[in-house]
Image 1: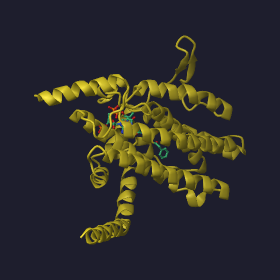
Image 2 (image 1 turned 120 degrees about the horizontal axis):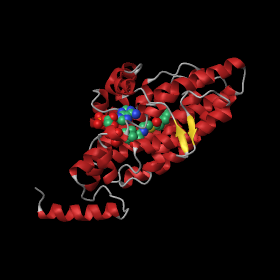
Image 3 (image 1 turned 90 degrees about the vertical axis):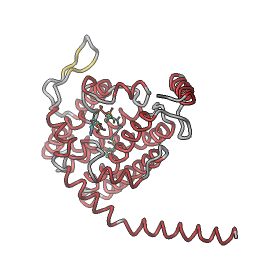
Length: 318
Ligand code: FAQ
């Protein structure tokens, strides 16, 4: 049962959410709101960091200095997004090491898309164009999320994601308009990344465990199905400009609805991947654990420096 103080705080919380005022870290919030935010935000942070792997894999193999510089900057941006998001999540009372442990022990998820391999250079175009494109559609809505630090992180992140999406489309355009072999690579990348990109929006609303509560609390501002449809509607004309074949034969303009109809996602595959059994799940986590271990000396140095500074301050005060 709620105490009288908590009941009053709950009324104030509900009022703030209804009035589109942000909830800030020092404000009272219901436990379930806090837990749900920690879950979504930490998974979002993990996605950004794990998402560095499929692209980082191509930095040494980029076909020109220009492409290498672009890719390097993009991968670095994704790492930065992860750091913003970890910091924003820490304001909810969880530590970075707890979040990392949850990722490495597979208690926390990360976006399913990053469990697919990047097999050819056109895949790097497809990741920027489709994966960042899908991420932006979701994140634009999240700019209006009710939790202040998450909302502000999204505003900064969306600016960089727009550049990511553009560079991916530009790369795809160069491939699609290049030699027959390059066009074939672009088509192959589109065919392989289309369905996993649609899966980024999560299960249908009717099967989404968290949507109802998250929409009520205004953590999520649009549902999974609405956002997925928006992504399809904006991407199909871009496929036409590239002159590539549709990756789904059921894509067809529906005059009455004013949107594209499309085929059904393979949900069995989706659940297999989010439950840890996709093509690269094992490899991604193994790599993260190794990189984290290799970086232990940096964390040790930071701790030692902090202790030294604190000791100095204590001496000065005395
Ligand atoms: N992958 O009840 P719902 C990026 C899980 S950033 C894995 O509908 P919710 C940038 C879900 O967590 C991409 N798991 O869940 C970049 C839940 O499991 P749980 C990341 C998924 O939270 C680009 C269960 O299924 N973006 O790409 C997925 O209401 C290029 C039930 O689902 C974000 O994280 C999935 N696709 O809605 C970086 C955006 N879908 O936690 C590098 C923020 C669902 O109970 C390179 N997140 N699940 O164990 C969100 O908007 C939401 O969390 C959704 C899922 C929409 C992803």
